[in-house]
Length: 162
Image (cartoon, rainbow, N blue to C red; front, side, top):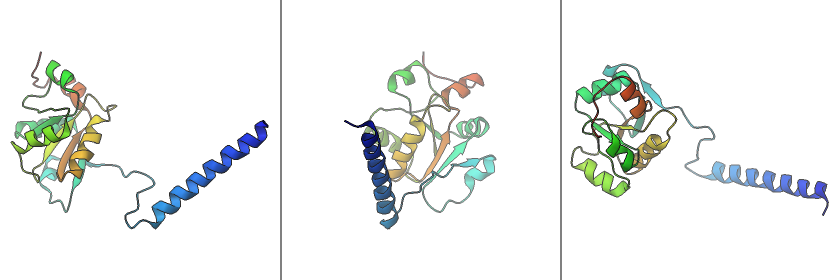
């Protein structure tokens, strides 16, 4: 088998795949963005009460997270239950099953109430993934605390667990 020929075939199929993907996306009525839009960052607690026009996911700082905690806003831990048991933000809820988590959330808030989703730290993508899943289920006012559990503990804020 000729290496040069194989390389040309690979390049051909890659180019064909890209062209097909872009064409299909372009022809859709609900096109997908080529580059993800950055999350809106809340820098002042006053922005929390800003009127929102639809489902929105906003990033918050440790200071805003602490203010929301003091206001008894619901916190949702996106980490696995084994990490949750070891330690979590007080009154936070957690469940590895999305449907069970939603049922538990609905005991505390309505679908339009704001709540905070967090994970272990800013390198953990579970909080953002869970937030988007909850948004798809109709929750519309989600705050993403990317600093997560690590930043919470590093700032000597209250914790529950072992």
